[in-house]
Length: 170
Image (tube, rainbow, N blue to C red; front, top):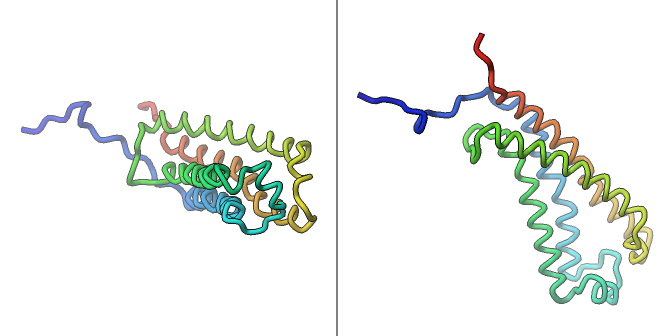
């Protein structure tokens, strides 16, 4: 006779993620790609608007700056893959309530980081290191998709939380 206990009870199944939530989660992963490729190009020695002296003095490229820039790209893309867990029906590393809390926290942090980056982009001397208007335009185009991530993450999180809300018995 098989007796099911709470230790081996399956997680309650929730509805599948809606198509729009799946698309938003995939869009988050894609939004991080252009800036990552730009950083890797910079680390590889491709001209991205910075002089060799600025790369050497400010970014330490060549040198440890290469590991930093490539590591930042890998970390950003890995973090951008996190929302795919929220729309996955197959793999759940955490309980739904814990994952929902983590996602709401991530959404809030992303909104704050995006606002901070807007402030930094317009106030810090990083733009003065760029050598041309074309390079600044390319920089703006490749980093602009990152500003869509907070909104996309919020809607994916909202969808996840809605689907996994514990229902009270009637």
